[in-house]
Length: 377
Image (cartoon, rainbow, N blue to C red; front, side, top):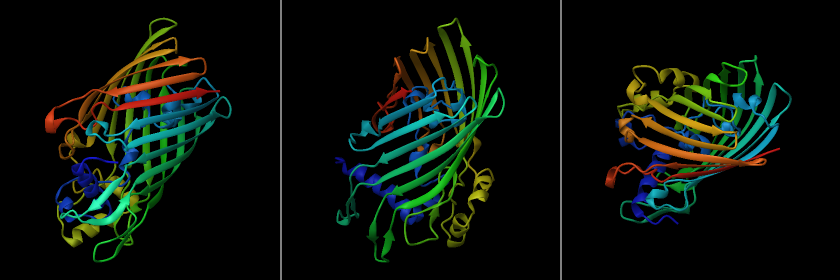
C-alpha cells in the first residue's frame, strides 16, 4: 500500500493526464507518451552500465536491448528473469518492473525470441482536491508481450525483428460529470534492430541501431479522439572490445537515444490540440524532428556511457553514467555500477543506481537495484 499522500496525488495527476488531457499540460512543450514503462531498461546488465546495451557484446538480456545480437550467443537456448523495485527511494513498496524472456537458436544463423514485461504501479486511491474519493482504489498495471525473429545477414551484420502487444490498465470505471468511461489501452508495435561486428571473435568495434515501439496510438476512454502516442525511439550505439589475453577483456561503449514522439503543443486552443492528436503514427515520427513539434537537440537526446570488465566469461564488473538533459523532466543524470557471476549454466546479474542530489533535488531513482538471472540450456 502506498503510504505517502503526496505520491498518490502525483500518480493521480499523471494518470488523469493520460486519460483526460489536462489542458494545463498543453502549455508545456513535452514529449508526453502513453506506456512510459516501455522506456525503462528492465535488465540488470544494462542497468549496471547506465542503460547501455545497443552495441555491447551479445548477452541473453539483449532480448530487451538489441535482438539482432542473438545469433551470436554461444548457448543455443536461454531463459531469463529480471526484477526491479521502482521508486524505492520514495518509500514505495508496491511499484516494480518484472520481466522474463526466452530465446532459441534455430540454426547457426537464425533464432527466435520471446519476452514479457510487467509494470505494477501499486495500490492507488483516487481523490479530488477536497480529499473525497472519486473512484474505488485500484492497482494500475501495464504489460507487453514480444515475439521476434533474428538472422545473420552476413558474417558481420545481423538483424532482428520483433512484434509486440501492449496493454495498459491505468484506470477503469466512470469519472466526472460527463460520464467518461475509462478502459484499458491496447495497441500493437514492433522493433527493428541491426548489429555490426568488426571481427569474428568480437574484438574491436561494434555498432548497433534500434528502432523500437513503432506502433499504434493508445486510447484510455470512450473519447476516441484522445489517442496517445507510445514511446517510439531511435537508438544508436558504438562499442569497442579489447582482449588483454584469453581470459581478461574490457569493453567500453556509448548509446544515444531519441524519442520519435511529437512534443505537445504550446497552445491549448482546440484547433491546435486537434491537429496534434490527428497526426498519423508514421507522420508523427517525422514530425518529432520538425521545428513545430520537435524538441531542442540538447534536450531530446539520452546518452549512456559505460564499461564492462570480463574475466573468463565467469565474472563481470560494470560501471556507467546516464544523461538526460530534458529540463522539463529534471535533467536527470546518475552513475550506476553492477556485477555478475556465472556458475555452471546459470548467470546472476545485479546493478545499483548511485544516489545523487539531496533534499527536493534528490534523484527519485536513487538506490534502485535490478536483479536478474539467466539459465542456459
